[in-house]
Image (tube, rainbow, N blue to C red):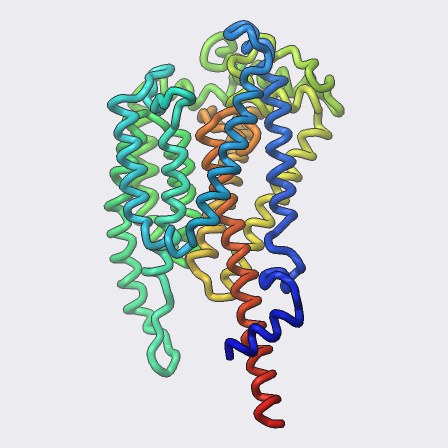
Length: 419
């Protein structure tokens, strides 16, 4: 068998993973990743030019940092994804989740306090936001957990025991609350309602994708959402911040200040925008425009056409992620498929919330626009998440090729024996 495989490999004289689609990975996904990253570098440089000059007397400081973060993210992703397998991530999900929770607790105790929140650990060169790492780890943990506890149970005749399966799923959801509740409490203490909202939506999406009955979803997730709403309404300033998006002009100088200037920026953009670098709102009107409200500056400079192009890139990125997950599902790779669906859900939810907040459709949550907004932790974890998706894609192609080669080898051996 091995000799036959080697013989076929010499005859085809190409890399084993390039038989399928003649490519080692999904280059369309890589291309969108690179385009969004380049847009991010350009827009961070444009949106931060005034504030960087004022704070550091160096106009391109934030753009340079974004490039360094991006190169570091690519290097770390290549190292991790090449040196680890998806099985390693699945087998170490518990340790990874514990490490992420320890980092979040460390941020609460030793972290920097900015605007009343302790979300960042100072590492000298940059501030690490552990909640960004937690999002990725929750996806890995949920994918492995759902693969283990939500598989179809069949007897020898292929019949499913529906009653037993529902009971097992109910018990699995109850056990799932053990790691979710500490995460929920830690993020409330920081407080980080944006990351908490994303994680709750991720868990909900992955439960539904895995086929969990709706009553299990209601039983597990809705109580947490109810607690979150209660925590918000007991503090008047939180209620004011959440509801200010309904009529930001009423509190244009207080809670609605950022949103009103975001809307003015988008309005000035009109159809084609005012041109790269010509934004007015970034000149100390929209605070820290290179982070949460970068989308507004982008809309001001590139207009409706540019915004449509950016949204199209995100739709293409999410479609390719889900396509890779679908192929993994067809091959029976449940963990890989759920991992892709989780990453795709995370990027789509975070992009939707960020754009919605900039457009005044949602309350401001302090979430960055994936791959575009300034932020080392967010950029690093988003690139690493996409690197894991590319690892899934590589294993999809590699496993398919191995099957094809073995099948061809068996045919050669059979032909020789028949001769």
